[in-house]
Amino acid sequence: MLEVGCARANDSLKIRTVIALLATTGLRLTECMSLKRDGVDPEARELKIAGKGNKRRVVPLLEWTANMLADYIGERRSDSPFIFPGNTRTGYAEIYNVEKTLKRACLRAGVEPFTPHQLRHLYATEMLRSGAYGVIILNDSTTTATAQTRICLISYIFEWISSTTKVPV
Image (cartoon, rainbow, N blue to C red; front, side, top):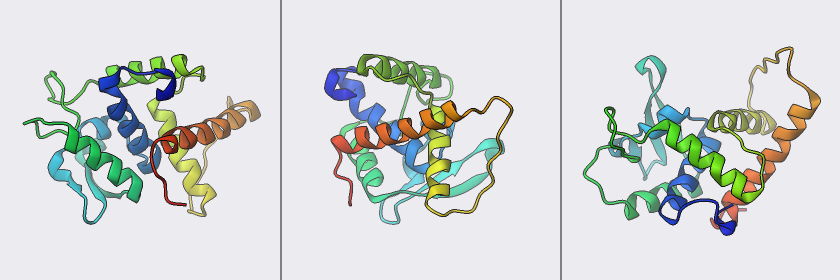
Protein backbone atom coordinates (compact mmCIF):
# COMPACT_ATOMS: atom_id res chain seq x y z
CA MET A 1 0.00 0.00 0.00
CA LEU A 2 2.83 2.40 0.74
CA GLU A 3 4.21 1.95 -2.75
CA VAL A 4 1.21 3.84 -4.12
CA GLY A 5 1.49 6.66 -1.59
CA CYS A 6 -1.14 5.50 0.83
CA ALA A 7 0.32 7.13 3.91
CA ARG A 8 2.28 10.26 4.74
CA ALA A 9 6.01 9.61 4.65
CA ASN A 10 6.41 10.16 8.40
CA ASP A 11 3.57 7.69 9.09
CA SER A 12 4.71 4.88 6.81
CA LEU A 13 6.97 2.99 9.22
CA LYS A 14 4.55 3.65 12.08
CA ILE A 15 1.48 2.28 10.26
CA ARG A 16 3.45 -0.72 8.95
CA THR A 17 4.66 -1.46 12.47
CA VAL A 18 1.17 -1.12 13.95
CA ILE A 19 -0.34 -3.37 11.26
CA ALA A 20 2.42 -5.96 11.68
CA LEU A 21 1.92 -5.99 15.46
CA LEU A 22 -1.86 -6.30 15.21
CA ALA A 23 -1.77 -8.97 12.49
CA THR A 24 0.95 -11.14 14.04
CA THR A 25 0.16 -10.87 17.75
CA GLY A 26 -3.61 -10.50 18.03
CA LEU A 27 -3.28 -7.36 20.16
CA ARG A 28 -6.20 -5.02 20.57
CA LEU A 29 -5.54 -1.56 19.14
CA THR A 30 -5.54 -0.01 22.63
CA GLU A 31 -3.01 -2.60 23.80
CA CYS A 32 -0.80 -1.83 20.82
CA MET A 33 -0.96 1.95 21.21
CA SER A 34 -0.31 1.76 24.96
CA LEU A 35 2.79 -0.43 24.60
CA LYS A 36 5.61 0.88 26.73
CA ARG A 37 9.27 0.75 25.81
CA ASP A 38 10.08 -1.21 28.95
CA GLY A 39 7.45 -3.78 27.94
CA VAL A 40 9.48 -4.89 24.91
CA ASP A 41 12.04 -7.65 25.37
CA PRO A 42 13.94 -7.85 22.06
CA GLU A 43 16.18 -10.69 23.22
CA ALA A 44 13.26 -12.96 24.12
CA ARG A 45 11.09 -11.49 21.30
CA GLU A 46 8.26 -10.81 23.74
CA LEU A 47 5.89 -8.02 24.67
CA LYS A 48 4.51 -7.47 28.15
CA ILE A 49 0.91 -6.35 27.72
CA ALA A 50 -1.61 -4.82 30.10
CA GLY A 51 -4.91 -5.91 28.56
CA LYS A 52 -8.55 -5.40 29.42
CA GLY A 53 -9.10 -5.08 33.13
CA ASN A 54 -5.35 -4.45 33.47
CA LYS A 55 -4.74 -8.19 33.09
CA ARG A 56 -1.08 -8.77 32.34
CA ARG A 57 0.19 -11.24 29.76
CA VAL A 58 3.28 -11.95 27.67
CA VAL A 59 2.91 -12.04 23.89
CA PRO A 60 5.57 -13.65 21.65
CA LEU A 61 6.81 -11.83 18.55
CA LEU A 62 7.80 -13.25 15.19
CA GLU A 63 11.41 -12.43 14.37
CA TRP A 64 10.54 -10.09 11.50
CA THR A 65 7.88 -8.32 13.58
CA ALA A 66 10.43 -7.86 16.37
CA ASN A 67 12.92 -6.46 13.83
CA MET A 68 10.35 -4.05 12.42
CA LEU A 69 9.45 -2.89 15.93
CA ALA A 70 13.14 -2.41 16.77
CA ASP A 71 13.62 -0.36 13.57
CA TYR A 72 10.65 1.82 14.47
CA ILE A 73 11.85 2.36 18.05
CA GLY A 74 15.38 3.09 16.76
CA GLU A 75 14.15 5.78 14.35
CA ARG A 76 11.76 7.37 16.81
CA ARG A 77 13.51 9.57 19.35
CA SER A 78 11.20 10.35 22.24
CA ASP A 79 11.30 10.77 25.99
CA SER A 80 7.87 9.18 26.24
CA PRO A 81 7.60 5.78 27.91
CA PHE A 82 5.21 4.79 25.09
CA ILE A 83 6.35 3.30 21.79
CA PHE A 84 3.59 5.21 19.99
CA PRO A 85 3.45 8.50 21.94
CA GLY A 86 0.76 11.11 21.45
CA ASN A 87 -0.36 14.47 22.78
CA THR A 88 -3.31 13.01 24.66
CA ARG A 89 -4.30 12.67 28.30
CA THR A 90 -3.17 9.02 28.17
CA GLY A 91 0.21 9.88 26.65
CA TYR A 92 -0.09 7.47 23.73
CA ALA A 93 -1.33 7.96 20.16
CA GLU A 94 -5.04 8.34 19.63
CA ILE A 95 -6.75 5.18 18.45
CA TYR A 96 -9.04 7.15 16.16
CA ASN A 97 -6.03 8.58 14.27
CA VAL A 98 -4.66 5.08 13.64
CA GLU A 99 -8.05 3.89 12.38
CA LYS A 100 -8.33 6.97 10.14
CA THR A 101 -4.79 6.52 8.76
CA LEU A 102 -5.43 2.84 8.06
CA LYS A 103 -8.68 3.61 6.25
CA ARG A 104 -7.04 6.35 4.19
CA ALA A 105 -4.16 4.01 3.30
CA CYS A 106 -6.58 1.31 2.14
CA LEU A 107 -8.55 3.75 -0.02
CA ARG A 108 -5.42 5.15 -1.66
CA ALA A 109 -4.20 1.63 -2.38
CA GLY A 110 -7.54 0.64 -3.90
CA VAL A 111 -8.27 -1.94 -1.20
CA GLU A 112 -11.56 -2.26 0.65
CA PRO A 113 -10.95 -0.62 4.03
CA PHE A 114 -10.51 -2.87 7.04
CA THR A 115 -10.36 -2.09 10.72
CA PRO A 116 -7.63 -2.76 13.26
CA HIS A 117 -10.02 -5.18 14.98
CA GLN A 118 -10.25 -7.22 11.77
CA LEU A 119 -6.49 -7.75 12.11
CA ARG A 120 -7.19 -9.37 15.48
CA HIS A 121 -9.59 -11.73 13.69
CA LEU A 122 -6.91 -12.31 11.05
CA TYR A 123 -4.49 -13.41 13.76
CA ALA A 124 -7.02 -15.81 15.28
CA THR A 125 -7.86 -17.23 11.85
CA GLU A 126 -4.19 -17.81 11.02
CA MET A 127 -3.60 -19.46 14.40
CA LEU A 128 -6.48 -21.86 13.78
CA ARG A 129 -5.21 -22.61 10.26
CA SER A 130 -1.81 -23.38 11.75
CA GLY A 131 -3.30 -25.96 14.09
CA ALA A 132 -3.91 -23.96 17.25
CA TYR A 133 -6.90 -25.12 19.26
CA GLY A 134 -9.73 -22.64 19.46
CA VAL A 135 -13.42 -22.05 19.33
CA ILE A 136 -15.04 -20.15 16.49
CA ILE A 137 -18.24 -18.33 17.30
CA LEU A 138 -20.35 -17.39 14.29
CA ASN A 139 -23.34 -15.14 14.45
CA ASP A 140 -26.41 -15.00 12.23
CA SER A 141 -24.87 -12.35 9.97
CA THR A 142 -21.75 -14.39 9.09
CA THR A 143 -21.83 -15.22 5.39
CA THR A 144 -19.66 -17.11 2.93
CA ALA A 145 -18.86 -13.79 1.24
CA THR A 146 -17.59 -12.42 4.57
CA ALA A 147 -15.37 -15.46 5.04
CA GLN A 148 -13.99 -15.16 1.49
CA THR A 149 -13.34 -11.44 1.97
CA ARG A 150 -11.38 -12.18 5.13
CA ILE A 151 -9.28 -14.81 3.35
CA CYS A 152 -8.45 -12.32 0.57
CA LEU A 153 -7.67 -9.67 3.18
CA ILE A 154 -5.34 -12.05 5.02
CA SER A 155 -3.41 -12.77 1.82
CA TYR A 156 -3.20 -9.11 0.88
CA ILE A 157 -2.00 -7.95 4.31
CA PHE A 158 0.80 -10.47 4.50
CA GLU A 159 1.86 -9.72 0.90
CA TRP A 160 1.85 -6.01 1.65
CA ILE A 161 3.83 -6.27 4.88
CA SER A 162 6.35 -8.65 3.35
CA SER A 163 6.77 -6.53 0.21
CA THR A 164 9.25 -4.28 2.03
CA THR A 165 10.12 -6.51 4.96
CA LYS A 166 12.29 -9.56 4.72
CA VAL A 167 10.12 -12.39 5.97
CA PRO A 168 11.88 -15.70 6.65
CA VAL A 169 10.58 -18.42 4.38
